[in-house]
Length: 548
Image (cartoon, rainbow, N blue to C red; front, side):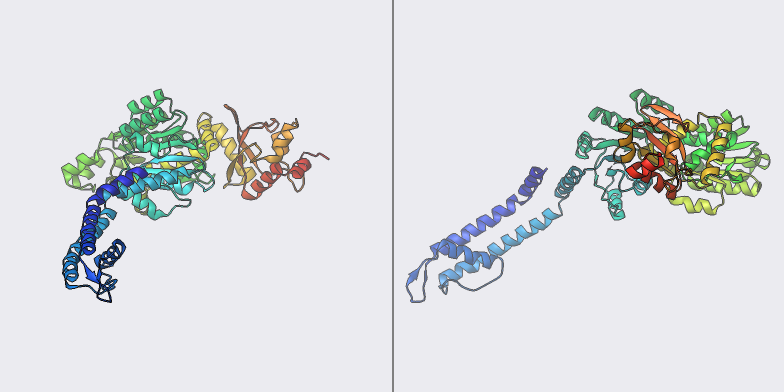
């Protein structure tokens, strides 16, 4: 890369350097050959150094005067001529340098060189994130400084500038480049040992497929997280063996299904994303007839959820681009639109879902529906986080924000893997089981329980790891004892235990822990601190285990 910069500079400044060399050579040679006189009137010829010194300050217009002796008329005549030649040559060179500084090729080469150095100095595990948008920004903001680092690539230079203005800490190396090129991914560090994976969440499934294929060829060991929603691409990702494929439409479909048929399963999943562990009336979708507006990928996914839930529904196949072309606007609500909603039975329906690609069309459609049926439950698709306040002001009952869903699920996968596993396991359970777990968590920890993940190793559980290496038998029940009084039990819940590939959902309190076990624990900060103190401090652990 340094060679590339050198050759760009050499190519751009070759002619200006030659001009300066030639003008200086002619000027110096003339001053050496033209005779002069010294202070005593004796003949004198300037040395090479004196001539070079004089031409240098004359050409740069500094002007120290005639040196080393007063010039003769022939010398002055020569200097009068070379003044214009050297100054013009010097100004030409300066202009070329200024042009070089603004040169696009040099700027890109310098940016690539700086980017390479930044990636090379990354010592922490990092993800390569392709494309900078609201989803990527949300993920970077949510991931803590002690979790992972990120490297961002985007073809659009304005988006990279936008990222730089965010001033993320720690610094996020970023560059504008074509993310589908192998050399760009190599430059971003895809071959480095501390590169964990690549995240590609473009709207275009074909582009995500192309990137996933390239990344898998370049490094088979890294994790590849991609967005995919069409059946054809999902099947292809499955055949590639990708562990995590983000399908926001499938997530929405499942949430609608569980909200109708198993609200406590829905509640446990939403709690994992920050919802309070309290099922409110507005959280449950109503029984009755549904109107589904929009039959694209999201509409088809929602239909699958409604059909599985056994809900009566009717589809209004409205497409945003076609609607705009026919009506010259995406604002829904004229006389023809009103008649269409009445024809669909809006007055007798329990819920209407606006699932088109256009946020304004979704918003105005639901506003019109509420005027025709004030009691109807409204659900909207929102494509961007930027429009959230507008949708909230419209008092829509439930909003599914694609960018937020993508950001949250990706964040959980990379930063809270046990919580992500818990969500998948909960979906396999019954509503009765979920209700028992919700009641237990509320009883033990309250309606706003926090969670944290812990792996039993020397770094995270020093004392416990040493005790297990000595051969001690320690159960989960023993680890719940209070360090203030070991006869008391800490209000914490072990929600999940992962041992290699084996999963224990809400494990039995008498199960014996082993080194390498990973625990998902529910507890408030105060009791989390107590627990971490016990598993890391030898004396505290001995006390709760009732050892002398």
